Image 1 (cartoon, one colour):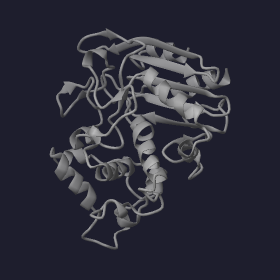
Image 2 (tube, one colour; image 1 turned 90 degrees about the vertical axis):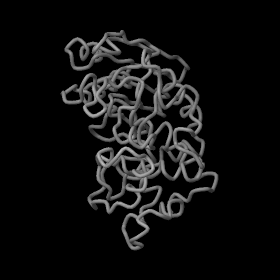
Image 3 (cartoon, one colour; image 1 turned 120 degrees about the vertical axis):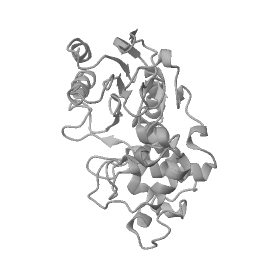
Image 4 (cartoon, one colour; image 1 turned 180 degrees about the vertical axis):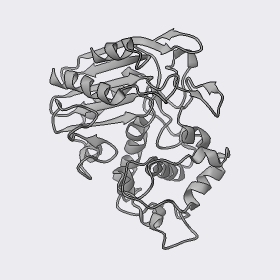
Length: 320
């Protein structure tokens, strides 16, 4: 199995693979170490993971789309309908024209990532900084900024910090350290991150729409089961509706060379997370799988081979 090979070769400390079928069968396999430094713990079937960018599709996307279906958000309206103070000192700024749908599909000129955490530690001040900054205008790329802004919109509409918004059962914004897969030995927080969000910007903002969610393989598979069982609902239909050759609303769609491998059907959607996580759903076969690893433990500065590992797992799962 590719996961075993990756662990034995030292590319990842450990991982959990979970699969569900249209017959309702479920299998979860854990292997390797949940933590190797400074102490050691085995990976378990119920180990909690920092899901990183899976937050975008498990939490933020469903919340935004549900509000749109309820008539509280117009997906084709600019963000300023909810965030009127976005670039408020420059009324003709391009940022004020960006729509909710464009953010969901990563079709905006925002940069891929920005070290927002280096501008301060006050979450409210950082929110103001993000809203008022004159952002670099570039080609459309996958950008955390899109979902940070969508998270701000959720906070405004629901009247609370994002960490206080209700989550699907089995998910949280932190997890017990003794039951979590460790991530990175953070150079600026001066500790091994475990049960506490790894993403620097999410940590500095005290919660954000692009990262921060924790869950287990079972909780991710429960989420996937709900989507598969409600494939014709307006919410899931939107999640599957393409906005480009590679993306739908929040999710990626199958394309040549993507993370889910080539054996899945064209009706497959998926997403990955920086910490080494991923989720894929094939609506034709009724199969879904999640691969959760701690590939950045104890450091991100190492070639873990996660791209090839995800594809190899997808080939086996979808191909079977």
